[in-house]
Length: 362
Image (cartoon, rainbow, N blue to C red; front, side):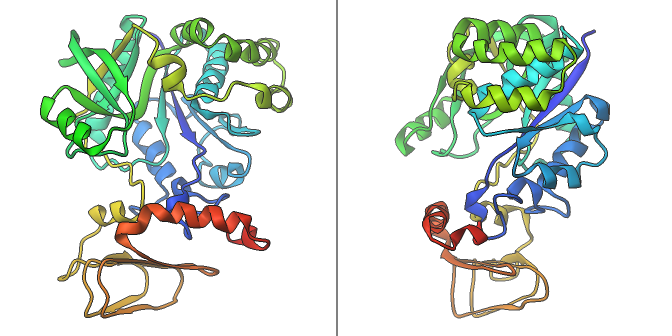
């Protein structure tokens, strides 16, 4: 049986969780939900599936220090910092090159670092089935999340006919991938019962990935050749990455490979899942008080309902006579925002970056 590997992508900026989330300490390095950073939770979830030496993390240069600080149980060389972000196709190609140098037929999973999953056993069961499918046939396996609402913030994947039964789970062919829909279309997808949310969880073998990159993304493949050659000769990865990475094609793995390939299958998930994309999503994971307020830290809410209040340190945050607010206090910044404007936090962060002294808040 092919050996298994896990690659966790941990380079997101988490701008919608400002001011707690910052460039060097973004969402995945914070205990947004739970008592440990989301990245730590992801690593712990996959440890029953693969040994620590088979877990890799691809992050950004600015986040490398923070990642290493919370992932001390992994081998030092298993944490790889991209010199600059070139989107997910480059990260997948880099992961395949690294694993391929160690195990040319290795099967590896690509997983996001910042999702919230409470049912670890079901998650592990589904991931093992995805590994088994990718080891059995030259396919690309995506784990599809059954939609619970007509969400417009996710891409979708439509299943086709059943492909195979793997570990007593039905795996389907994939008819198509679709981008984030409008509300009317999302409602149609939900009613059909044939669409899943695309959560960015993929399992495939090194030969399958390399073949797809060569066929569908030759420009990216050409850039990756230098990295593969350096690894084959036992050279240090960092110098060649600094030289080659800025030249790599910037494109998502969905656009580059998955939407063009005819060997993609989808495994419906059985575990709970939340990508906690913005502050309002956090409320789903905290026990509310009698009027629906949630939060963490020192806080007092008087005559208010539906508020989300987070305070770092011993600073007391008090909300009086207000409903449905997001209030987040850190040592150097405070956010006050109506919940229905949560998506606009990203715009505020962009504006901050343009200010003369804005960088110290990013």
